[in-house]
Amino acid sequence: MLLRAEGLFLLIAIGLILFGWKRLPGAMRDLGKTRRILKAEAQALRDDVPPPPKRTIVADPEDVVDPASGRPKQ
Image (cartoon, rainbow, N blue to C red):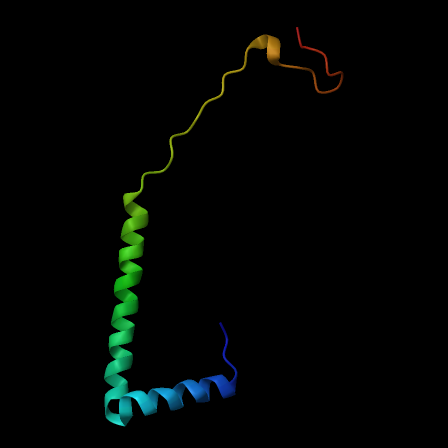
């Protein structure tokens, strides 16, 4: 998501109001750590799920049709 200059300025202003000038770098650092942890956990969950088994469909020779004529192949 791209932010325009007004949106970015508004986010910075709200951050300064909520956290203050001295606590803002620490809050952003903690937010970055949280993001990295969540990303790692999501990847671990994706790695834990096994891929679905491959299915093989076996057709009876009587079920195979010629694509040109639409009649069963013999």
